[in-house]
Image: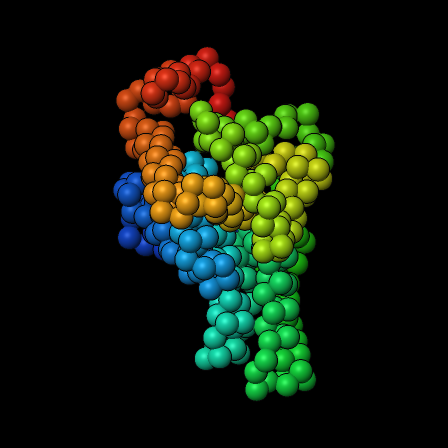
Length: 345
């Protein structure tokens, strides 16, 4: 079977299959799991670096550090970057796009190149999976900032650049997705329908809360909830992040029948909101306890928080004896895993 015919029979973009094909050149029968997983793990690691750099430009070093730690230690992101699947490359190309657009907005040397690199990277993310679309609110925010900033580019030149990259992106996406939709088999269309509107009786909608707590058990969901609420105290600063969060959340929680692990699309902006929540805690402690005492206690609390998340992630994904979630095991004061539950990971 030819490569093009194979790609057009798939249910998503070509990136994961092309990467797997490159692995096949070195390991024809995929006997080496490390080699197969490594490109996807590297993509996940690089996405953290780009995520940090993008946030550092937009919101400063503290928000960038806190959000990057939350992203790094979220069990769902760890789980998704351990397997041979598209998500790490969606993250990689999405964070590269956001970083490039940020450079275009903040650095004169990148005012044109950043836009072209950003659109190219965003197109690559969407070609990897349609999930790449969900960074759109923050992309539009960054492009608006770029378009209105003072520089030697006049409005006509800026508009011309935007039109060139937009047309190029539409052509690239159409070249793949139009044939993909046209060639979709009955089974593929049935699969899409079952995920979107639940037309198949065999598909039972999963709970996004269950999915989150499966990868992030114990106190993590409560930590996310509290810090997310606290981030509202800085909504003037993080309003674009809330728009980014709400776009995929509304689609996957209200429109799509079975969200599955696609909740990672709104967990990425959620980590930024958590960082703002931590800043609220830090500022409040400094205000009521004094700057030195408040900073010392806040630093100790954050070390405890991120240390806890690190140990939990190591427990779930590195320590395999016994194997979570199929076998019960103890973590601190919690018993995790249910041997009789049919987990669909």
